[in-house]
Image (cartoon, rainbow, N blue to C red):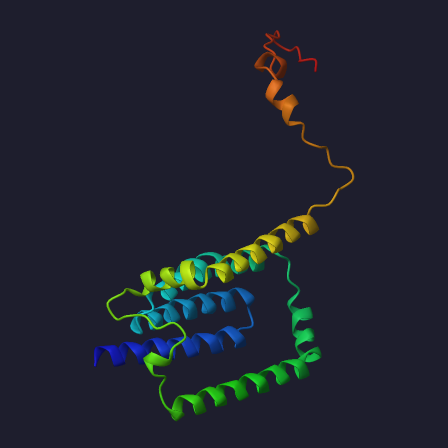
Length: 203
């Protein structure tokens, strides 16, 4: 009874937070509703025994992605009138995506009503005595090792590409000379003077 109550509570809050994320007029409020949805989705993952996914939702999505979205939205000078004008401009594309997502949801409901998935037919069945995180680690570093390393290389290439694209030469900017800063002595940077009353300091 407690598990069913917790499931319906988390599920209702997730759905409500997702709807408020989409319909919120203020982007800051939308990000806050998104963080609430992530927290409750993590609660659902804990209920089904996927504690590793729940930890990823809290640490990665809430702790990094959503907070990054929040800081970007708060620091950038966003023109809300332009955003509302863009909504009408891309309404047909958004409607097409909405229809596609609705079709996927209908297919998912049909597959769910057809019957549950047997544990023996899974691509990577795990014994019941093995914890969720341990089973995931064993699969990643044994059966899916090359796929895992390939995903890491793709992310590394993406990071290097982002650095290369954003690092450009700017005119009018004084370059930093590390060796000159290291060799600088305190007596070269400061000067002790004792001016008399009413006399200024010559620079």
